[in-house]
Image 1 (cartoon, helix red, strand yellow):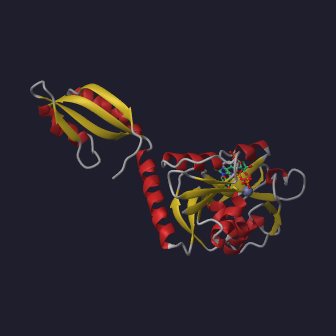
Image 2 (image 1 turned 180 degrees about the vertical axis):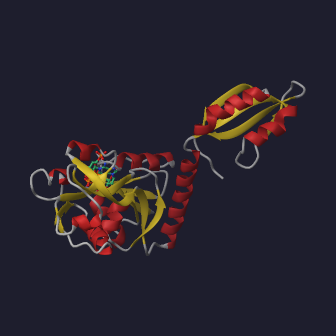
Image 3 (image 1 turned 120 degrees about the horizontal axis):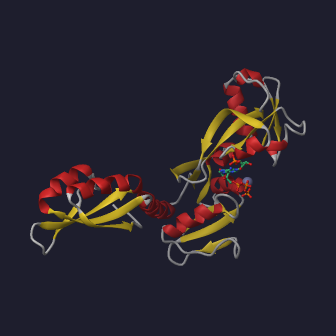
Length: 283
Ligand code: PRT
Ligand code: ZN
């Protein structure tokens, strides 16, 4: 049995739950229980605040966890980052009032910077040899300059909308973050095996994202030409048809390239093209 800590509610909760469900794991959501056991995979889900996940994993209260890389850096706990998960993407930036001039980090010397991420900010300022005052506040960091609590802020930015609404401009992008899978450093052999099974499933889910399964009928004489425009997994699957001189070709195509490729295939003589959703790609 392995125990995974995920955010109970908030921005990472839904994607974390969805990832585990796509990996074929069923369990109850956080509205019902704080600790939910799966019936079909040896895993328990512990729902926590994201701030508490790095420490819970470091202490072994949970064996593994899903949390933003920003929290991992800020809490500076001894844990392993095992896998990047590609959701919850954001950056942590320094922003100042829009009207103010900015010509490099030196401009921050002697300034008061409000943040919920003092550890990451201090590291950045030390690296840049800038002496500024760090004001740690728990929430609503973005209003600090307007109410005279600070001259600048250091906070999470995603679309940038919050900064604009508060009359601020982003001047230093200090770190990029996304949700990551973290693990305790002293996992038992049993837990390591379960973690590997989980990673295998997560990677299969990730591989299939944005991919489509495409079937088409094609004159046999065109197979070589089609292969040259469709780099498949290893090689495409080609099946004979009852109609002489024709075959069926099955291939996986990235959604981004789909329409361009289909135009090319039709020009070559492909017919009856079917595009299907691809659920998992297990290699
Ligand atoms: O209750 P709990 O402590 O668990 O949650 P929380 O309120 O501390 O965190 P939550 O749910 O807001 O965010 C969890 C994680 O999501 C963060 O640690 C980041 O890793 C990630 N993440 C991704 C974000 C954002 N995008 C984000 N946009 N976290 C916060 N924001 C906020 C930001 O603080 C700012 O207020 O959104 C605003 C900026 O967004 P834009 O789009 O206007 O730039
Ligand atoms: Zn939090």
